[in-house]
Amino acid sequence: MSVLATLPAGTFNIDPSHSRVGFSARHAMVTKVRGSFNDFAGAAVVADGVASINIEITVASIDTRSADRDGHLQSADFFDAANFPKITFASTSVKDSGSEKLSVEGNLTIKDVTKPITIEFEYSGTATDPFGNARFGFEGAAEINRKDFGLTWNAALETGGILVSENIKLEFEISTIAAQ
Image (cartoon, rainbow, N blue to C red; front, side):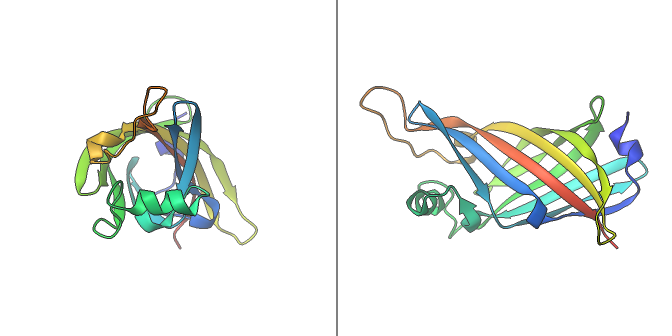
């Protein structure tokens, strides 16, 4: 089934209270640390079976459940939130890539470095909520190398290896509401 063909034309705003923009990274070579950004906004526009997607994330809203780690991630060692307060994504192509799936190509900008990425999304359905809002759900992921975006800080471990993995998995759980 074509996801783009099933979506009505219009603007679909991300509902941040029912969505998550997160990530996971290998820590100390033994486990994964997960985090999310709690302040983000975005929308998808669909017209004639063509879609575009944009999202803006506030770096200072990073939340890994550790205030010390969040502070370090906001510092110049990583995101440098004081000088680069936003992460953005703007699609360049949205295509059906199989049953209930979309392949979203676009430009991800972190710290004024823009690189193309592809996010594979699965359409998770449509519903009308008790308030009459038409909702559309999508879940997706992509993997990036953080060094490509100038996030190069690391520390060597006594046992060999590094503290923070270079490869980061981006995670998206998105609920959109059709704009009125």
